[in-house]
Length: 322
Image (cartoon, rainbow, N blue to C red; front, side, top):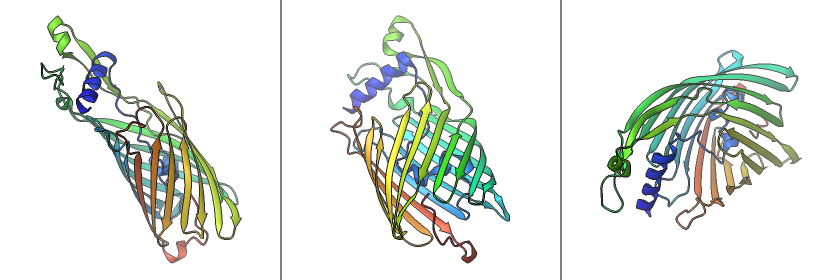
């Protein structure tokens, strides 16, 4: 099976060209907003550090694996300004990508209990493509692909975002990557074309991803809150992706919910506020797509950890559910 997948990837590279994997995918996006929207930086009012690991389509060789770590906080006494830092490592098959960005936000009060933030991010991106791992003919013959590996190819990144929030509502728009960088453009040969003296072109590039995120918190009673949320993602050349979730928070401590990624997967989510400073979240996806829903896939898993440094004067009497 592994050889068949590798052979298919080689043919795809030779005939259609390859696009670098686009922005990483998350099920617990509601707790990882800073990774896709720089305007979220500092919005929680304290120093917040979070880490997330995602293993997608477990059991399929070369399936996506993502690690994210980020932090953000208000900028000292300038409570209307925030800063953030995020690092994302994403791997699928022979392609590995590392994004590192610095975020800045500026917030204005639009009413007594509502704020509108504008954000910008700048940073870079490292691309690694290991063609040498595919240079094997599954039938034991001549190498299928002759191309040099790409090792840590750097490209710059700039992104923007807007984020509006109240005590029980939030909404944001963002474009995390405005630069559609072409990482690589050269010719290579596969075994058939070598025999015929021909060449095939190859291209790896980044595309702009457009995000919309929103959610509303309903207070059912003193101990129970309910939050529906949605994340929309649009990128040229791919169908619009929509994630919808419904989560309950009990006693400001334990959360349980379900999510659905239209046409792709449904998920179960759970979170626990271990203390005022520490939160842990888990998610499991069951795929309904043709690739993810194979007998080789055990679904997708995420674990999320958030640590927040709360001083006495910063203590939030009613913690925000986003």
